[in-house]
Length: 86
Image (cartoon, rainbow, N blue to C red):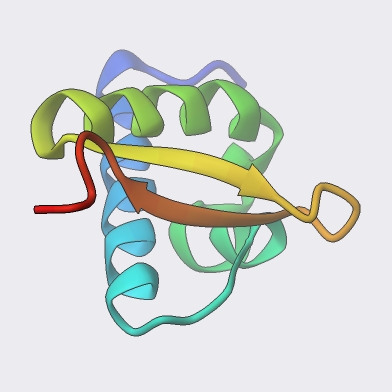
């Protein structure tokens, strides 16, 4: 079943919220955890496109870049954009 634009927006916002919360708590962020905690079961197939929307929101709204690390374990870390020496 195709997702409506409203559903896509809500799912992307849920991913943004999860990423910000997990980063604040200094928890490792895994793709599987994002799917489990931020997406409804029927939306997990659209993870890649929703994740792209969420990372763009983080970049444009908060100035935060999402950088993938440990690709084999599918971890993601949230890193602030810009000059980190401030």
